[in-house]
Structures are given as structure tokens and as C-alpha cells.
Amino acid sequence: MSELLVDFITSLDGYASAEGWPGFWGLEGPEYLAWLGEQPEVTYLMGANTYRLMSGFAAGEVPDGQDEFRPEEEASVDTLTQAPKVVFSSSLEEPLTWANSTLVRGDAVEAVREMKARGAQLYSTIGSLSLCRSLLRAGLVDRFRVVMFPVITGATGAERIYDGYPDVALRMTGHRTFDGSIQLVEYKPRVLDHPPLAAPA
Image 1 (cartoon, rainbow, N blue to C red):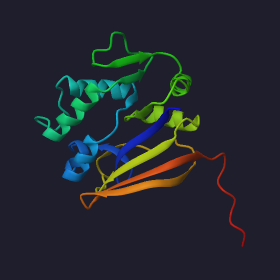
Image 2: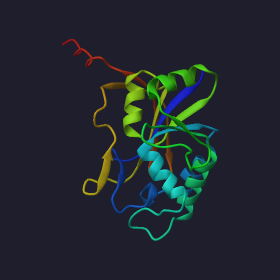
Image 3: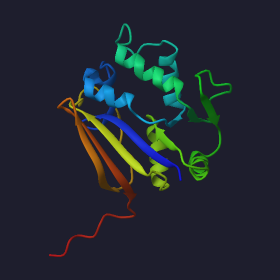
Image 4: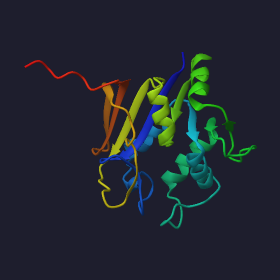
């Protein structure tokens, strides 16, 4: 059976990015970068907005506020370029220009359900907050992983990750600290229909 991982990189206060900050908030260290390079083969799932952003980076567009990519950012984009990617969108047109990208126009939840049933493979989301919410609500997410960087971006943070989420119970299945400051936590998620009952007095 295939496995679906929702994978987020966040600030401590739950933002996916922040205006004026570089990738990884400029705080990645050698242990974290080495771990990134050791990840198993995966097929990435994304929506149109993430595709437009990341394919632009792959084509040489540099984020606002930067003159050029740092080597760590270039390596991350190169890894994504080489990996298979499935893009869910009704607005993008074929052929997709980013290498190894497949466009799916149908319902993303049903498409992922069918993809997971085909065989043993690891799928992982990248960005695509609304897609992640939909897949989680549908009960398709097997692993929920967050890498938290040691920064609070209350003034500049963009894309609050958990807005619009259902209530979710999380059972921790793994954790790790990189470079003495970056914290990874991994959970098995369970979407709740309602808050747990209060504990008896």
C-alpha cells in the first residue's frame, strides 16, 4: 500500500514563509542539509500556485529580496526538478514546462485515493496548503511531518499553515533535532469529528 506524507517546513509560529527572508529562513545547518539529501525517492503532489512558484525557481527566477540563490536553495530546487511531480489544477495548460511534471485536472482527493491504491509508493506534498487540508479531511494522510525552524515571523510571516484545518489528534511517531536548533516532529494524524470529551472530574 502506498503512503502519503504531508510535509511542512515552518517557522515556530506556523508560517510557511515570510516576506524578505531567504529559503529555510537562512537557518539551515549541515545536519539538516545532510538529512535532506538522504530522503527516499518520492513523488511530490502540489497545486497550481506551488507549481507556478517552484517551476519559476527552477527556471531561474529568484525570490523577491534576493539577488541570487544560495547553494542550499539551488540544491533543493534541483532535487525537486529531478523528482516525479503530480500537479492538480484546472487552470494550468499542458504541456507543463517543469521536467517530470504530470497534470491532473480531476478531483484531487479521488485521484490521490486511486494513486495510493495502485501499489507501494511514497507520496509527499510540497506547499499546497489547500490540497493538504483536503487530503487530510479525506483521511488519506498517513504521516504528518513538520520541521520547525527557530524563528518567529509575527511581523513578516505569510501563509498561515493551519488556518481552516479541522481538529486533528496527532500521535507522535518520531522526532529529531538538527544542528541543535531545528526540530522535526512526525505524527500519525486522526481527524476528529468533535473535540474529545472532557476528562471525568
